[in-house]
Image 1 (tube, protein in one colour):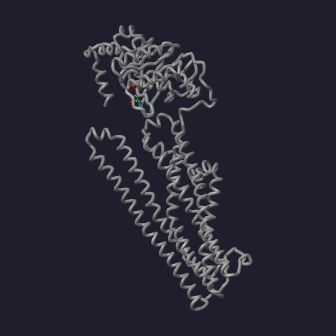
Image 2: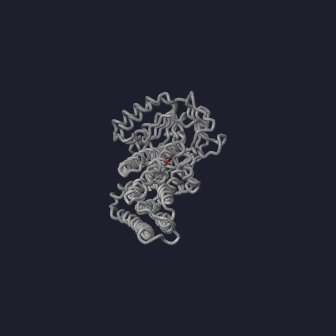
Image 3: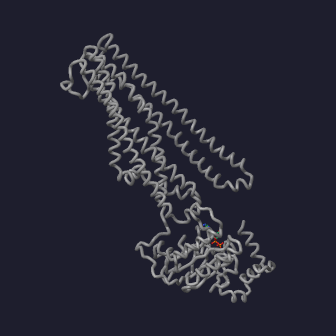
Length: 584
Ligand code: ADP
C-alpha cells in the first residue's frame, strides 16, 4: 500500500461531504446557527435605514412629504422640527441596532463555526488514534497533521466567513430590492438593471477561477508535504550535506505555488474592478434616469413624480450591493475549499479499523498467564511472510526468551501478543495466539493490554527529555504499578551503560518472577536463565530449549554465545552475510 492510497481510497468514497458535515456536526448547534442568521439579517436591514431617513428628510426640506417604507404616515409627526429630531433618533438608532445585531451575530456564528470545528478535530483525532498500526507504519503523519490542522481550518473559514458573506449578500439583495421597489418601482428597475449582468459576470469568473483555485490548492498541498518531509529528514540532509539539493526542491514547489497563485490573482484583479465598474454603471444609470425625471421631465414609460429625497436614497443604496456581490467569488472559493477539506476529514474518519474489539465485547479477566502460540503466521503486507508458522507454549510464570539475528521476527512476535497487529491465521480453529485458552481476538483490546506489561526499545514519555536508562526505569515503574500477569520485554536493556544495565536487569528479574514473561535481548547473558529460549531465523523457530540444551546442540545459539564471550571466529559465515544484508 503506497503512502497516499489509504487516504485517497476512502476519500473517493465520501458522499456529499458538506451535507454530512452539517448533518453530523451542524445539527446539535443549529440553535446558534439560526440566531446567527437572524441577527445578520436584522443587522443588514438596520443598515439600510440611514439612507432612507436621509431621503425622507431631503423630501421634507424640498416641501414634500416625509415618508419611510413600511412606516405608516399616520404615525409620523408633521412639523419640521419634530421630524428632524425623529430622523436623528432613527439614524442613531439604526447604527446602534446594526452594531448590536452584528455583535449577536458574531457571537452566535462563531459559537456555531468553532463548535463544529472543535467537535470535528476531536473526532478526527479519536478516529485516528484507533487506526491500525499498519496505518502509522506508512508514515502518514504529514498528511494526518494537515487534516487535523489545515483542513479543519478551511472548514472554519467557510462556516465563519463564507456563510456570513452568503447571508449578507442575500439580505442585501432582498432588502435593497424590496425597499427600492416600494419607493419607486420604475427607478428600481433602472438601478437593478445591472444585477443580472453582475451575476453573469460572476458566473463567468467562477468558471475560469475554479480550475485555478484547484491548481493552487494542489500546489499548496504539495509544498506542505515537501516541507514536512524536508524538516522531518533534516538530520539526513545535514549528514549528507544535501541542503542545497533540498532547498532546490522546496524552491521548485514554492515557485509552482507562486505561479498558480499569480494566475488566480490576475483573474481576481480583473474581476473586482469589473464589479466596481458595473456598480458605477448602476449609479450612472440611476443618476441619468432619476436626474432626467427631476430636471427635464417624466422619462418614457414612467408616470407620476419622483421626489428628490427618494432620488438621494436610490443613489446611496445603488452603491450597497456591489460589495457583497464581489464577495461571491470568495464565498465560492471557500465553499470549494471546505468541500475538499471535509472530504479529507471524512476520508480519514472512514478508514476501517481491522484490529478491533470483538462484537460481543467480551473481556479478558482472571488471567492465570498460560500463553499459547499455535502455528502463528503473519505478514505486514501481502508480499512477505514475516512469521512463518511458530508454535510454543508458556506456562504461568515462565520466561520465554527470543533470540536471533535482526529481522528474524522477534519484535513482531511480541507485537502480535499485544495485538498491535492481528495474526494472519484465518480463524481461531486455524491457529492464533491464546491466553488461558482464549483467542486474543475474542477479547477487548483494552482488557488484553491491561494484563500485559510492556517495556520496549523506545519508551516514549510525552515531551520530557530523559536518558535511555531513565526512560527504562520509568517504564519499569509503570509496569510495577500496572501489576500485569504477562510481561513483554523488548531489548529492555539495550540503550544503557553496564552499571545501569545491571540495576535494570535486577528490577526486571524481580518483575518477571511471578509473571509469564517474553524477553528479547541481544545480550545473551540476560536471557540465559529463561525457561525456554527460542532461536528465530527468518520467521521460524530453528532451535529451542534452555541455555544448557542449546549450548550442547552446538547450533546458532552456541555460536552466538561464544561470539558474545569474545570468540568472533565462531560466527558462522552465512550469518555474517545475513547481518550485512539486513542492515542494507
Ligand atoms: P527482529 O525483532 O527480529 O529484529 P522484526 O520483527 O522487527 O525483527 O522484523 C521482522 C521483519 O518484518 C523484518 O523483515 C522487518 O523488515 C519487517 N518489519 C518489521 N516491522 C515492519 C513494519 N511495520 N512494516 C513492514 N515490515 C516490517
